[in-house]
Every structure is written in C-alpha cells, then in structure tokens.
Length: 467
Image 1 (tube, rainbow, N blue to C red):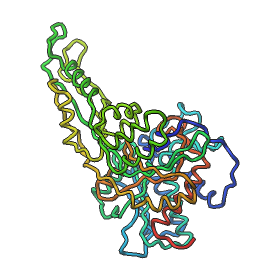
Image 2 (spheres, one colour; image 1 turned 180 degrees about the vertical axis):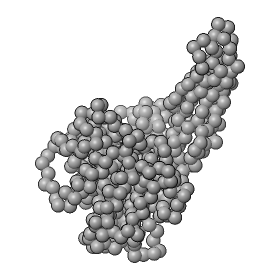
Image 3 (tube, rainbow, N blue to C red; image 1 turned 180 degrees about the horizontal axis):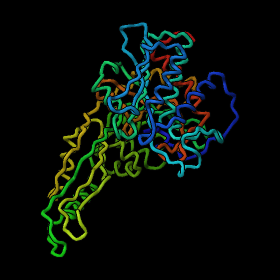
Image 4 (spheres, rainbow, N blue to C red; image 1 turned 45 degrees about the horizontal axis):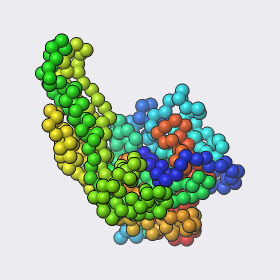
C-alpha cells in the first residue's frame, strides 16, 4: 500500500515527457525492474516465490554467496515465498538496517486495463504496469542497490538486509513479515528499517513541492457488530428485529467521532503543511496543534477527509450480512467495522468507544483477531539527518515533511516487534499513480532520480565510505 504526501498536497497533474539519456547502470536497473513488474505476483494466480528466486539469481550473479541469500517459503504455501539477502557490515557494534519491500501486488484483470498489466510499458514519460509504483519500484531500487554495492566492493559499517516479502496487499494466505516475526525473529533483527510510505509531492508545474518521511502509521483492526434474535415468520413481524437493531448501531457508529490525537510526527506534519494551506485551513491547523480540544479548528481541518483521518482513529462499516430467508424474520445480522487506529490507541480503548457509541442498541461489539498492538512512533532523528543532507544535493530547496500513514504497511509489524520503520523520501509523485487501481503508473524521470537518491541514502545510513 502506498499513500504518499502527493495524495495530500498535490493535484492530479501530468509530468511532461522529456528525452532522457539512459546511463549504463540505469539499463541494468531497467532490466531488473521490467522482470519484476512482468512477474505476476498477485494473490490469485501469481507467485512471489518466483519473483524472489529471480532477484536472488541476480544477486548471486553480482557476487553474493549462497550463504548470504535466504530464500524462504512458508510451509504449505509454495507461491508465498520471499528473500532476505545480507551484505555484512564491518562494525559488529552497529545493528543491521533492513531494506523492506513487498513483492505481491493487487490483482489486475487484462480486460479492465488499457495495456497488459503484467507488461512494463514506457509511454509518454511514464512506466505503466501493475506494481510499477506499489511496491515493485521500491523493491527494484533496493535490489539494485544491493547489486551495485556488491559490484563496487562496498564494505558498509552497518550490515544491510534486503527483505522482500509477500502478503502485504491482502494477507489472503499469509503475511511474510508477521510470519518471520513469529517463526524466525532472529532473521529480522535490526536497529531500523527503510520501507515504502514516504516519497514526496510535485507542484502543478512538475517540480518538487516537498519530500515525505513517514515515521509511524495507523493500525488496522477489525470489529464485528452483531445482533441476534429468535426470528420467526415474516407474516408476523415483531418490534425487535436483528436487522433494525444492527442498522441503529451502525448509524450511531457512523456519527461517532474519536478524539483528536497528536504525536511528534503529526504535529510536525500539520505545522509544516499549514504554511501551504490557503484560507482558514492553515490557521486552523496551527490552532488544533496548540489545542487538540479546539472543536471549531477540528471542524475546519476535518473537512479534508485525509486530514480528518490523520487526526484520530476512524472506523467504518465495510461488510454487511443479515437474515437467512426472504420470508423469515432475521435471526442474525452483523457487520464488519474496519478501524484505522491512531498508533497510541489500544484495541481495548477502541472497543470501549464503539460500545459507548452504540449505546442501548441490542448488539454485541467484538474485536476480531488478529489483534494489533499499540505501535510506538519511531524517532525521526534516526534517518532525518541523512535524508535532509542528501536532499540538499538531489532536491535543493525542497523541505522534508514528516508524515504518518493513515493506511497500513508491513512496517506496522516491524514497529510492534521493536524495529523502527520509516517510509523513505525520494520517489516523487503527482498523485496520479493510481496504485491498486487501473493503469497504475510511475514517472520515469522521478523514478530514476529517486533511485539515485535512495542509493546514496542507503550508503549514508550504512556507513559506506568512498564513492
């Protein structure tokens, strides 16, 4: 899942196509990227295992030993494998860093797309294809970075672990990161991880507006709201009806507002973004940062659904079922409520809020496993300094804005497991990538520029000396 700053700050615009000179190292990257995009890794018919094997073969050709390449396949799930590749560091006192990206993609049907979703097409300054942005751009960049470092004979001070996983988009069969934490925690031991979720935004003229550094994300948790009833014949209605009871409860949940929350990251985000907001929005942001109980400021800021979501836990009905026959009173009616919890809100707190919201409606409210723990917000200082240092070279004059994702990535599992995880800056977007949707795409120009930035960011954070 990719929710970049572009979606918050930039309108949907077009990046002008321009002829580019393709460097030899970019040719190698393009080949890797093309192979990755054209390998179907959706959860219906695709294979993450095949994609992981292909990347492992390229790493081996670059000089990695078999012992440095951990191709893992969860038992009984031959298509859901992944890869952990290691470039050892020279300083045993420094913990490792993880380069995290997921190989799986959302399903794409050929009949719905203008172009074959599993053929990488370069057209008008864009790369088109399923996963071209989410998340195979980053998976390709990190894999390519590991190859370039090995070929250059780099000896980082800090060990670098490339972690390519499956199950982030749907978890239909398994989520590799959760599985690794449960089954092989020693494999993912690290001081911190770099992940998707950051990036940056472009102005309407196609030039950089801001870079985004994601530190922390909301936690996804499902709840079941259910009404039970003895039922009976539909010709003899009774005042207590399971569907009506559920409807009452859902209307009350829809009207419920969770309290405004802030953390270090969201305070920084709203403070920074306030300067770019026209009209009363900017001033309201600053008032709300100063006083989260300012209802008038909240009302103004929350007119933007994306800002509203970043400020609090949100819950929404996503699935509904009820009744068992067209001529019978319903014996059961239930709904799934998908909550995106602010990192500091617990499952217990949200459960209590939902129960209070439904009030005397005759329903039960139950949190549905798996349960996600409260996630601490990683400290920005870990990667902010290096990100800003290199931004001065690659994006002069462009600020880095801290963000918190309102969605969820595999980073939520690593953070809960004690590995601070950051969505890195660098991959700029105008908001039109349409990840998860039809005709997904990414700018060729900004993909290549972001690749160079991220290569040097990895070098900086790993303590690689020289050129």
